[in-house]
Image (cartoon, rainbow, N blue to C red; front, top):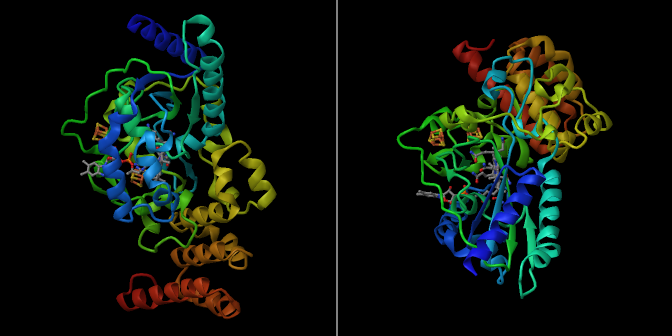
Length: 396
Ligand code: B12
Ligand code: SF4
Ligand code: SF4
């Protein structure tokens, strides 16, 4: 019987690899009981910001059996999305934007979900024909947005270990693995978990531009640039804006700093390769995108999800960090954009790139007509920054 279960697991593995997954492992739902306590701590400390679904789904997420009572085995699958170029190199050109590696190609949710469903159909339809399985096989597939703790499960299933940056690191693929899972009622043998191979290294914690790590393996999502640029829908805190540099969608710094990336390889999935126009697009081209052009440029890309409003906010922050006054005419045009979020970011960008007289002229021309309170507050904060700096002689 045990031999047959091992054969079934091997058959699932070979099918998954044929479908394009790079790593596969098996674990049982009770192997991550420790993670539920950490998740509860994360939620209790309010580290999740506006991702309200984290507290809403807390009980279901904290243990796979709370999500689905009947699950006996969790199959964890990983796809390598290793980039061609070290993403840290792109941070140097302040006039081009950096989109995180995972979003430079095709949306992984869609692609992985399709493959997971394929594998699930194989398990339900083909396995019973090939093996003497008495009970019906039931399966559910999950990727990313579902209430599943993918990283601890992947660690338990031997795909790698949770590094100090909290993401799963693999000896073979470094930090560049997307994760997905299949829950099944079939009881299968477990894989050997991978031990923690971080040792005394702290490269990922040290590199974080916003100091988002409270300690090793504990992130304050509210400070993470990935959260700020993708999940957060408001005016980003003023102190964090300069630290964002030219990162306009997500951030890869902690991932890219990991020494285990030395064994990483370019993804074998062509759809994950960077689209040329998304590798290092010019800020000047991005900032003027209207809604239809934004949708066209980001067709099938995860970037589309944040809509033009958040996207242009992010681009304007990158422009504010460029130290290049050539953008002032474009910024000025956006001071009257219909979106308050965009007007607010345009004010901050104008503050960064103009002198006191120029800013004062903009203030007198536009601030009086502003009707949104949050944008009025941006005008006031920028004006105050000028008067504060004028006193210290820093910005005039
Ligand atoms: C919410 C979320 C985010 C949030 C929060 C990030 C985070 N680290 O939790 C934000 C928006 C910031 C984010 C950013 C990113 N994300 Co994200 N995200 C998720 C999501 C949906 C849930 C993660 C979660 O549950 N977080 C809550 C915390 C509590 O969980 P945790 O980190 O697993 O917590 C463990 C440790 O922190 C530890 N712990 C907690 N407290 C304490 C205390 C002590 C004392 C100790 C010792 C340990 C400890 O125990 C916990 C359990 O093991 C998952 C998909 C999923 N369903 O799992 C993707 C996921 C984690 N994201 C992913 C990616 C790729 C990213 C980015 C790289 C994207 C980018 N380039 O911008 C960044 C990386 C930022 C980073 N350093 O984490 C991938 C990671 C793949 C991998 N190899 O691990 C996932 C798995 C999506 C996927 N299906 O592939 N993400
Ligand atoms: S993704 Fe960037 S901002 Fe977020 S924790 Fe990592 S280095 Fe810090
Ligand atoms: S950079 Fe160092 S500490 Fe961070 S995950 Fe990689 S090995 Fe671990």
